[in-house]
Image (cartoon, rainbow, N blue to C red; front, side):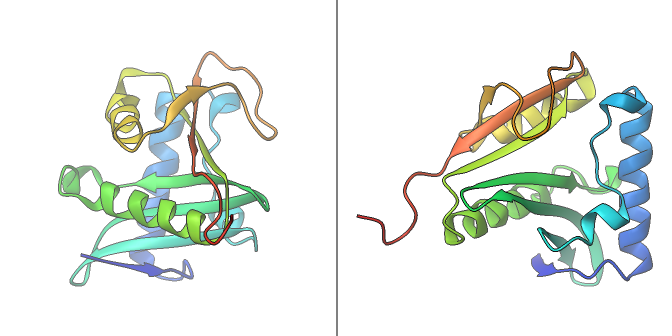
Amino acid sequence: MHIEVDDLSRPEVHALLAEHLQNMHELSPPESVHALNMDGLKVPEVTFWTVWNDAELVGCGALKELDGMHGEVKSMRTPASKRRQGAGRLVLSHIIEVARGRGYERLSLETGTMEAFKPAHCLYESYGFSYCGPFGSYQEDPNSIFMSLELGQPKGAA
C-alpha cells in the first residue's frame, strides 16, 4: 500500500467520500455530522491523502490545521469491503507523522458515539489518543466523542 496527497479529482475518491458522508448521515442526526464535503476538503488548511493498493483505493484521511500548534484528523475512511487490511492504521500513522513534522503539539479528532464507531475508537486509543472535551468550534454533543493526542515538543525544540 502507498499513500499520496490527493487533489480529489478522481471518480473513485468521489465515490469513497460520498459513501463516507452517506454513512455519517445514516448514523448521526444532521446537526451532529461533522464530516467535510468535497469543498471542505479543498481549503488550504486541509491536506487530504488517499491510500492505494496498486491501483485500488483502500482508504483516505485528512489533516486540518486548526492553528500553528494544533491539527485535527478528518475524513478517515476505508471502504466497507476493504476494512481490517491496515489502510486505516497506515493513513493515521502518516497523519501523526506529518503533524509532528509540522511542529504541532496536539492532534485532535471528533467521532461518533454509536456502536458503529467503536472500531474507530479502538484504533485511535491504540495510537495513544485519549478522550477530551470539545476543541476548536465544537460544542458538547451526545452524539460526539472528542479525542486528543499530545505530540510533545516540536522536532528540534530544546
